[in-house]
Image 1: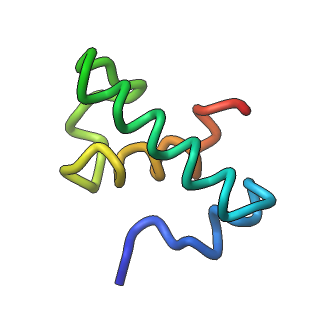
Image 2: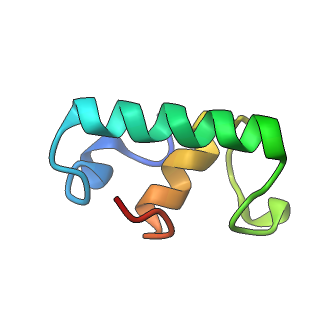
Length: 63
């Protein structure tokens, strides 16, 4: 099972296409700058894409 659930995130973001764009952009930012909005120990995912999804679910990314 994927974490965080796409169904929960789609309650925050209206469109799957917008979600993909936001997650891809944020994932690239994390790779290039190593800047995270949470301490690395608080993330459940190890990869940047999963971490971007977690940030969206927690409301840390505004769009």
